[in-house]
Image 1 (cartoon, rainbow, N blue to C red):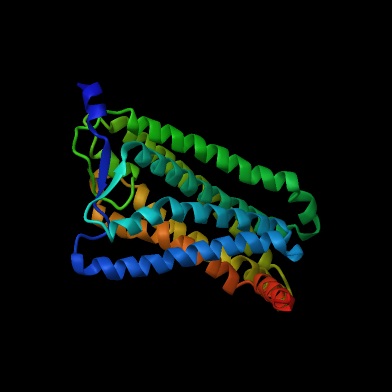
Image 2: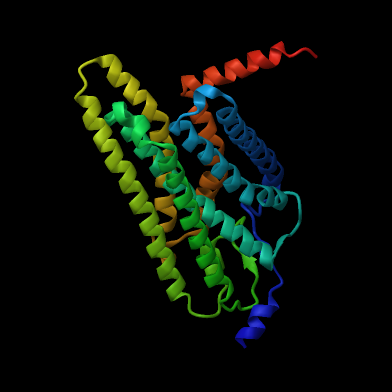
Length: 313
């Protein structure tokens, strides 16, 4: 019976964000603009931090990887979400659903720990400025990036395999606009208690451990800033951390709301709105926040624009 159930479903039907026909066209236009801004902004940040010699510091190394993750994060969900607004029934093949889930989990978990690495980088920059280049060596920076990638890839594969080797009942309608773990659990015939427990433990560990790193880093930063005598020094230290703090609180607040709660208390309509925010809106906001609040990024944009204007047509 289990084997039969596993082979019955060839594809899933994604319900999308809304089933109201009058909202399909406005939502398509809105999310197309958001996705395009996200792609251009994150690609621009990647190219900018690679091209400009003044942005070859650990801070922009992490920012480049954050932009790469945001680009992958939004692309794993955005295009399929947009299709849902222009077709009568948005289907996704069984194996593509598994791939989408795997990439989605990998990028979400990677982002959490990259933000932790960025918090540690800001701690060293503010609290140990004389040893900054020694502590934040190229080897350390790569370690703080590669380890999250490997861990998130392992976790995403474990979760995806655990769900997709379970038996589905034949009902293939996913009450979401992408293949997420929680809506997929409702379609399983077999007991989901072990998967739910694993998701709850892993989600809580990822959120709490990464957030603690950020929290401790910024408590130490705050203590150092308050001990500074010069007002200019305090302002400079605050300004280097402001953009990162905005991104951290927006992302962590949304994810805590989404995942650290039992399945019984979930409302899929509420979850959809939260999911839209952190899968589509946050990847668009991150490059805007870092570029609009960062003088070095704006300076690099200005220098590159001037150089492009000098090129003869």
